[in-house]
Amino acid sequence: MSLSSLLDRFNEPETLKMAKLGRELRAKGIDVIDLSLGEPDFDTPQHIKDAAIKAINDNWSHYTPVAGFVDLREAVCSKLKRDNNLDYSCENIVTSTGAKQSLANVILALVDKDDEVIIPTPYWVTYSELVKIAGGKVVEIRSKVENCFKITPQQLEDAITEKTKVFMFSSPCNPSGAVYTKDELEGLVEVFKKYPHIYILSDEIYEYINFIGKHESIAQFEEIKDRVIVINGLSKGFAMTGWRLGYIAANTEVAKACEKLQGQFTSGTCSITQKAGVVALTGDLKPSLEMTEEFSRRRKKTIELVNGIPGFKCYQPQGAFYIFPDVTHYYGKSNGQQTITNSADFSMYLLNTAHVSSVMGEAFGEPHCVRFSFANNMQNIEKAWKRIKEALSKLS
Image (cartoon, rainbow, N blue to C red):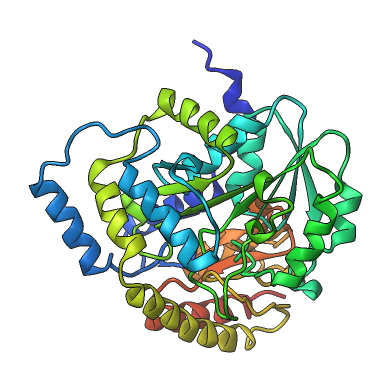
C-alpha cells in the first residue's frame, strides 16, 4: 500500500522529535534534563481548574458550536479589549483545539498552490510546514542576532512580490525571544499599506511572557487591521498546554472560512476546556504575572550561565522562555569520536554526552543557532548548563 504524497511535503516537528529521543534515554535510566520543549513547568491556576470541575458537575458534556460557545468568544473579545485595546465581536472569533490548529485553519483558508508566504527567521517550526501542506512557497527573511532577530521595513519590502499572500510572525518570538516595539511594528505597517493583497498573521501566544513592558499587537493599526489575523491561546500564559484551547481574531470572511474548515476536521473544541477558558480569560491575571516573574528570574540565571560558555554569541531574549545562541564557534570541532558540523550535530552531541535536550536551529530556519528553554526549575537549569559547559570543553 502507498500513503498520500501529502506526507512527503513536510517534516515531523524537531521539537517533538527531540523530546521523544529524550524520553527514550530516560526510559533507559539516564537522567536527561529537558531544555527542548516549550511548556511552562507550572500547574494550571486553581480558579481555572475549579471552573472546569464546576463545568463537569453542571454537565457541560455535549457537542459545542464549531467556533466555540458564545460566552467563550465574548470572553476573548473582552480580553482583546482589556489587554490590547482591540475591538472585535463574536463573529470575528473562532476557538480551536490549540493555537496550532488555529494556525493551520488560517493557512489552509488563505494559501493556495504556489502562493508565497513570507516568514522572518527564526520562526516556530510549524509555520513553514503548514505552508508546505497548503502547497504554498515559503519565503524567508533572514534576521540577525546583531539586530535582535528582528527584520527591517526594507527587508520586508524587498521580499514582497505579486505572489505574496501572507506574512506570518510571532512577537514575542519562539525561538528567539524577540519582541517588536510599537515603533518597529509601525515601520512594517507602512510597507503593508502599499500592498493591500497581503494578509498579516500575528502569533501572540507568548503575549504575557514579556520582559520589556507592554505587549504591542500589529492589529492596533486601523489601516491594516482588517487584514490582520491574531493568533493566541491559553497554553503559555495560563499553563494550560494539555487543555488545548487557541483562538483567532479576524475579519468575518476569514473567521467563517476557518469555521468551515474546522467543521470538517474537529468541530468545536472540548466543552469543559471552553468553560474553564472563560474564567481564565476574564479572571485574575495574578498567577500569569507571577509565572512571568519566575521566568524573568530564570532568564537572568540562564544568561549568566550562558555567558560562561566560551564561543557562544547570545542575544538576551525580551520575551517567551527560550535562549537562542549562535553556536557556530563549535562547528568543525570534535571530541575524537564525533565532529560537530551543524546545529543538529550540536544538539545530538549534547543529548548523548551531556544528557541535555535542546532543539537544533535548522528547524527554526536558523542553522547557526540552537534553542534552549528555561521553562524548567532553577536547579535543573543550573545542572544542565554545568553539564553543557563540561561537554563542550571536550571539543577541540
